[in-house]
Image (cartoon, rainbow, N blue to C red; front, side):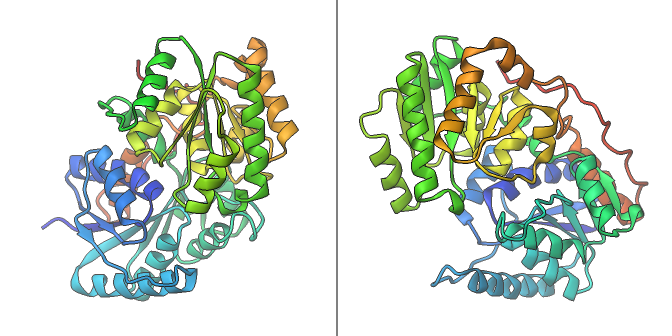
Length: 394
């Protein structure tokens, strides 16, 4: 019987980044991957896995009432501990910095199960931002048996903290594997307006800006500043369309609808399924975002990103020149967006010749690293430092 490796996914980004790993493990045939949906965001996890041809092998159920972090963490630890008593995983893989990541690492550690941390080593240097993610990933780093860093910078963060170099390897980011996979699959847009905008952008008839602002620190006045900048961009560029998938929180959606009411060429949608979002991103001229995942995905498609945050743990994008921190200042957003839309040289300077996040082989390296931890192989060679950018599907 093949040794079981349990992959814990509680949020959409986790599902997206773990799906290629499950596929790589299944293809190699050395371990049995078990995708565990922890119940943190069950609908979004199921949708993201399905977009990549996967489904959860185990689905846990939570009974949440307050929605607080302590309630979520305690329920996740309880349910995961019970899961680990019913099953016999040899290794537990956690991804990123969510509450599922922290709970899964703790529950596995208490059961003396080796923890592999995928996307290890990201640091903003500020425990308050992003919160609670910065704290989560630092705590997981203390108990992980193997740290799979997406970039040399992330690996350097771990080494600077005293992590054993033998337990750190740069494998790239599996989000690149996922993005390249999903844009090659057929996409059915539920919203006909989004479908029409995507088709027009693909035909070169319009320019498209994707805007996402989902982080809690962006809500309220910061989001209003972003939306005012979006309106001004639409007023200035008659060939520009905006697709803005709004946060499902009713108050946030109402804020977006009110701020963009009557704005020409602004398409406000419900949250887009992953396949649809990736396709829109691949067609975009620019992206305005506070999302860490989109900061990683945009370079895959050669799309310049204006980051609606004051600091980012995805420093590689900024250093490579494919992302620029603009915060939520209305004038700063407008200035930098206009610079890209008006100046072909400035635009070309952000379509960089290297992809800081991966080459599409991170999942294979992850499979080999896990196999090595089980004594079935040697550790993979690290990801090459310089990578040609991946191109969007036609």
